[in-house]
Length: 252
Length: 311
Image 1 (cartoon, rainbow over the protein chains, first blue to last red):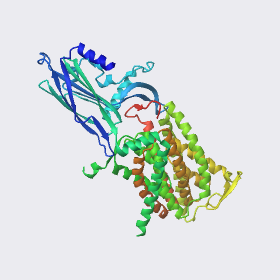
Image 2: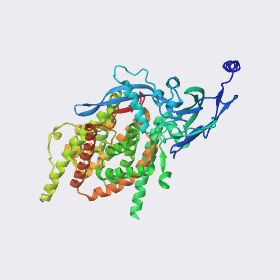
Image 3: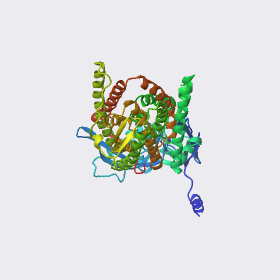
Image 4: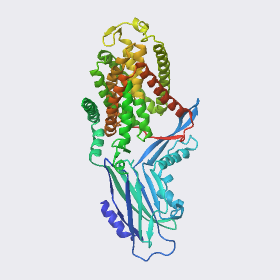
């Protein structure tokens, strides 16, 4: 039923003037035992039925966002000579990873209104709507999330890093660090002219543990007692084995 | 790069990528100390794991698992040398298991208040400071006495500990004392072990020497014996409630740690008890000083991020 409705809607409204056709070097990131970060190429073309519109050139914004989770932010203050957590603010939703790549300086490719609407910039990707307003300067707490995660390489803004050829072909590369969390990484591509969004394309990059990593992780969540006993058994066996090996080595 | 680059390991539970040689080296270093002093080494390893970027909850839980292994090889070495008082160890263990249960309840309560980091640090500073100070002074006095040619220092044979009921004979230690003090020592070590994420040897060893009056040579093996079972219990508690035990991290740490512990045990038997004690005292005081500075100096980042609910 839904599909039929969508089809009718598609027929009723003409396709947009400019549309994204996308390619990814990989739509899956496999976290293996020697995973050391990943490098994803995002490239595509702009499909259009009409000649290239006159005026400002086409700009491209690419965002990759990890799964969002609430974050408790705590602030330290000096009490009785030592530094103690005093205030705390709950940031409703902050992505575990967030990268924005643009084809020109950020304020040239996107207006503030469009940024607000689509939550593109790092500051806007974090939601702290329900933040406790009795604490003055709740914004400082949201800023701290950005600052700490930027320093950890988890949030990054890459201006001028999307190459656009002939207003038709675009490509960029996004580095993902080694300390990724699992989940669906939503990827959005915005085409803009004069800072206005012309077209949006969305897809997901699947970040998953594989092999032994996956097996251990699943066991630890689904059979925690078994996993705990197994960890102990491995530890004790290794302890005893290495001890025996060391003794044999010394005796000749 | 070469081999160094290849040895990068992604830890499945901690969800970070770390160099395997770094983990082996850390394990080895702490293992040597564990064998020498009969301490689990957790009070050094846990902060070291924070420094290399392991999430604190994972570091604490995995450390418990690693202590089991490093202590296991240490206990085997001591059992062969017959320097474990099994009876005293069992009494301490009963207290330790009760204490660990209480400790986890206290830990979860503090976590809900958001003050667990501070209280853990304050616990460290207070305990390490007091114990390190007492041990340092005692060992200095003992060394001075033996230099003067007074022979082995004589222990006080009778104090208030000997007036309590439920007396039991501990042949290996050459003691005939009430079971109440060892059980209480076990309970307090268990509580602290669960809260501070350590084996608790650095508290138990001095308590056994100064409170129970056990011979130093037996103290190391017996404390390792108790630590094994209490940390195994703690590991299972963490694995089933917080899902924070990383077996890959534990295995890498213990491969280094087991070898280190063997070397440490050999060094320990060749040194005089007083020298061992003064070295341990200096190390305990150094860690205490570092933690105290962290609390007193202006932190470089006033804000910290934490998970909400769950773990």
